[in-house]
Length: 126
Image (cartoon, rainbow, N blue to C red; front, side, top):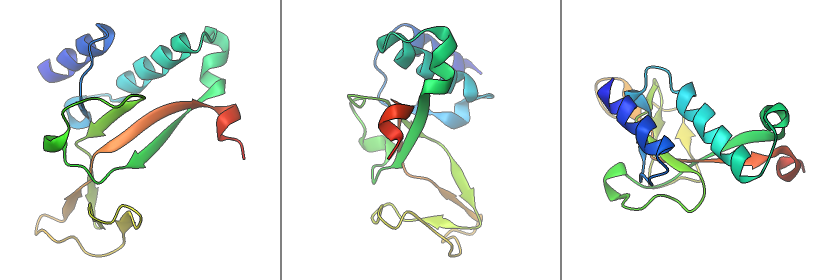
């Protein structure tokens, strides 16, 4: 609980934090909501249109959380999510998540660091 309060105060204080541990949040949607509001404020969108005109885009990175020193120029880095019953290979991010048995005996596999950005739906439309 203390760690999630620290993250929210850092986020609201406009301090740059290199990466956020999603498992520290009881309700991670609060982090996503704050992030979406920040992007809407940056793009000068009204409160009525920001929910429908913005969407999240997530990309798996080959990075470990220990190697992240600086936050991304755009968006935020997240870590702390696990997969059950399948595995993720950090070295081959093009393949992403494979439907193969996990390599550790616990049956779970830690996802690599993810880069979350918020983009307008006009940019996302093909």
